[in-house]
Length: 153
Image (tube, rainbow, N blue to C red):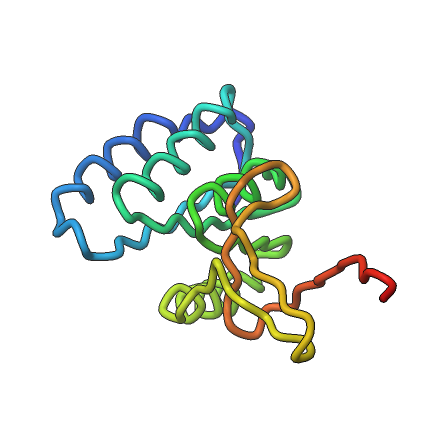
């Protein structure tokens, strides 16, 4: 795989696929895999499309950023907005194993609005709000950091 630096316009193809997937049963979780090796001219539109599809159509969008020239910001934000996972492939030789790992992850349960009990006196509920107000999903075997302030009694 190689980039031709001609630009990647994925909004319309992504929108077309999402519309076709919306015809699949309402309760079915639809899994979409988006691969890109570049940038787009309007990343905010693509991110908002992913967010709408995840919230309205029960669609999970998993992204792959391929090569050193891909927009890491784009694939990260589309995956987060689309309630999916993001995989980055710097070298082509890593593509096969990364795709296999992402397919396995897409089939695993995702967790949000999760209660974590640290002690009987302290628990925390994830409210699915990230640092920028975006929702987030936690996948099995993902590392996460929880921070809090404890009151002095």
